[in-house]
Image (cartoon, rainbow, N blue to C red; front, side, top):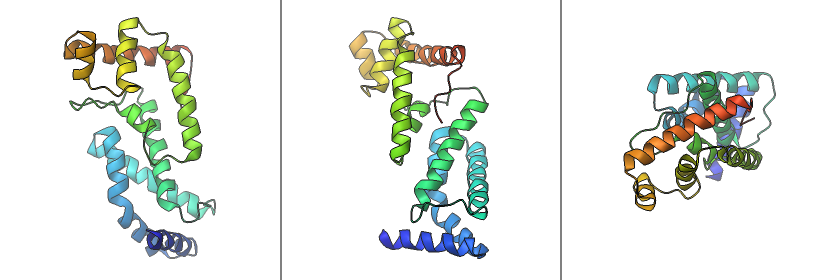
Length: 194
């Protein structure tokens, strides 16, 4: 692991010194991990590809400007850039992330991704505090499902068993809770992330 970090740092410094091939090596080495991370949030290959390209355009611009100072932490830095671009994508398109039949709601996956650094953990805590305040404005049945799903990490089957409603009703309440949260956020002109 240490060996790879040293190699990343060396490749970055070689690229900054003018070795274009060094960046190709870095992209090739980390493409799968970064692309998979982006795809797991957007569930769309074309969008994931675009965000992946944008991530490396940003990486190149930052390195060319000489503004890179994440010595030895190249991958977490690139992951943060892609994470921010994913959030920008959702904001620009003014839509909630898609969710599929695995019960996963991507916006909360983004917030709880394990590669977040200390600074992003603080942002995450602030976001969670803001979200909790907003959640208080939801109708009781929607709030109940949302809290069970997000904070207790229960599946929709477990929520259905606990609340005595069908899985479809629980899913519907979650969907409406997210739609209403979006409306509340827009009403208060809140931007949830930096």
